[in-house]
Length: 367
Image 1: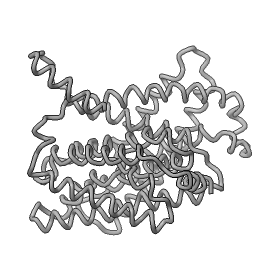
Image 2: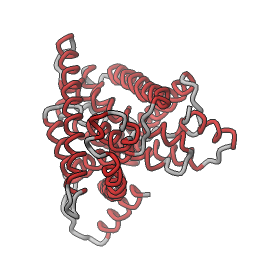
Image 3: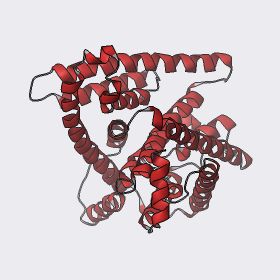
C-alpha cells in the first residue's frame, strides 16, 4: 500500500507538473536508519532463555541455508548466460537472497506468538548474515585463509564493541535525568552503527545484542555486574524507550517505502526483459524455502509465504560498485522481485488458517 501510494503521488505530481527535486539520495539514508530501528524494535521484543535455543537454531538454519543455495545457484545461472565474472555475479545475487525484516516483522504482528517470534529471529538473522556475506564477497579480492581470518577478527572486534557500547548506553539510559533522553540514545546507536560500517564491521550485531540486552534484563539479573545497573529502575526506562522506538520505526519505515514507491518508474515495473528473471528468482526463493521448512519440521503455512524482499535488498543493491554491476540485475529486476514477494506474502497471510495449523504454530514457537 505504501509503495502504491508513493507511485500514485509521483503520477499526480507529474500530471500537475509540480517541480520536486531529486529525492534519490534520501533513499539509502532513510533505509539505513529504518534498518537500525527495525532490528532494534524486533530484538527488544525477543525473550532470551534456554527454552528458546531450539527456536534460535532453527531460525538461523532457515535464514542461512536457502540464502547460500539461492545465491550460488543464481550466480552459476548468471555465469551460464554470460553476465560477468562469478564473483560479480555472486555480489549481484546476494541482495535478492536476503529476507527483509522491514517488511516481515510488521507484517506478522497479528499472527500467532510462535510465528511472530520465529519471523523476528529469522528475518533479523537474515539481514545480519546477508550483510556479512555481501561484505565478505565484495571487499575481498581473493578468498583464502587470510581473508577468513580477517573476517573472524572483525566479528570478534564487533562483539567487544557491542558489549562495551551496550553497557555504556544502558548506563546513560539509567542516569540521564533530563526530560529529553531517548532521542540522544537513538542518535548514539545510529552513530555507533555508522562508524562500524565505515570500518566494514558487522554493525547489525551491535543492534541485535543491544536490543536483546535491554529486552531481557529480568533474565540477566542473576549476574552481579547487571545489578550495578539497577535493573529494576532501568527496566522502567526500557519500557518508555520501546514505545518511542516503535513510533520512530513506524515513521521511518513508512517514509522509506513511500519514497521508494515515488521513485519507481512505471516502465521499470512493466519491464518485459526482466520479468521472466524475476518470476524465476521468486520461484527459486519459495522452492528452497519450502524444502528447508520441511527439513526443519516447521509448518509451511504461513511461514512459507513470509519471505519478502525489501529494504535490505535495496540497500545492498545500492552498495554494489558500478564496476561490479551486471546488466541483468538492475532496478527493474529488484522492484519486480520486491513487489512479487510482497504480494505473495500478503495473499498467504490473508488466507484463513485452520485451528490445527494455528495451534501447531504456537507449539513450535514455545517449544
